[in-house]
Length: 558
Image (tube, rainbow, N blue to C red; front, side, top):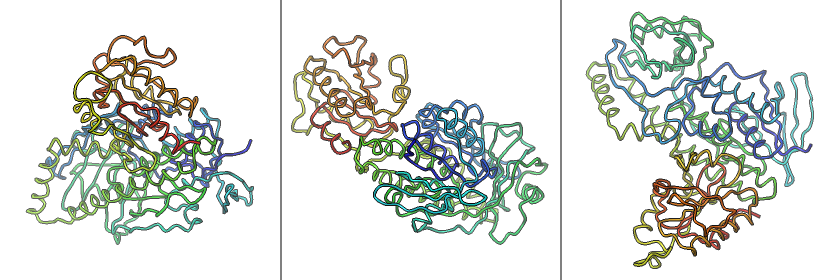
């Protein structure tokens, strides 16, 4: 069977890329030069938006079963004086928490899913030796541990091979940025603390000697211990060093042992100028690396893969235009650039805060931290940002909307044209490029209805019920089906408890008796939303207009 793609790298990003390509109907191979999932598990936190992606993929249940839910953080001095307590809030998702799970466990679940659900097994100890590309595809030379293996010809090559990416280096792309003047020491250990640490909270100790953080892991008494040390601090990566750091920076009477692994590393802030070069794409750490502040790295990489796979499948199958692939960089690189900026500011701010030594300045720092973290709007904003549910693509070249001008709105009467209030409220709905929120719809939830590999057309009836409006919605559905066929599903959402008889019988109807779905989508009058396979709004219009929808479809599809 001819291959559609070769995935290089079998970390979480590469595993998601291969699984998503297969789910969207493409054949692929995935190679990795390592022997198996890494035990050096730097990534630990899985955020709400990533869990939503896992839900769509069909792999969220085993991930949740292995992980530990984290709902906040407790910041203390080594003398156990409270500095601040932060609760995770404001996450409008079925998963309003952080999930703590070692990267190794995440990789094991994803590799098992890839093989069980899609029949694809990771080819271990296989290295990408070199590659070349032309207009028709990519020719890759693969090498096994004992020498030459084979030459592979594929339409697309996906570089998911980490910060030292062979693919990126072969493309000769600069990795622009800087290295922080700090060394991180990290270990998975069993810890005993002389204070009750809640299983669903991070424990962070701040004192004159520095910071010490404990992230809860599955298993009794097990934590990810993390701290910063000076680059010239040459203490070795061994248990005695971590025990010494705990004595220096943690509460008296603490102890640790039974390490699963220990590691140290420098942190960087770097990004490539381009995510795509011809038929070769970069994702995850191969394209961007940054401080671990906020636990964003692995999550961003997974969502890179989730964003690209459906686009690649449509183009590879001749359904969509090649320009669809250019939107990958246009959408995902700004997200990475903003994350690098946010984590850079946070990391440098933390470094500055940790240099404070006098009791006065430390006291001011602690009081300020307590005040800021107690503000409700700060906690909610932080929760929405860190969870990545607010990631959106408003400037993407493939999203759009049409809305009646103010000169054409309804002033009186009850026809399907929007009134001034309807026109204003449409702005409250998910904008083009925004994530579609989850909510109950009929006997199901919206995210359940959106699951799968299709586009989803949501047609809102609005408050005015007319035969003309139902006929127009039927025409809109027909336009979408004529262009996308089985790759689109359509629903008409009616703000009532009865199915209108004027609607075509082959159009599924969702009842919205309390009007909540209409309200969340700003659909007080007739409107439509086209939701992409990744759960973001691709197009919307008020009122429904089959010709304008057709024009948007013409931009993307063959």
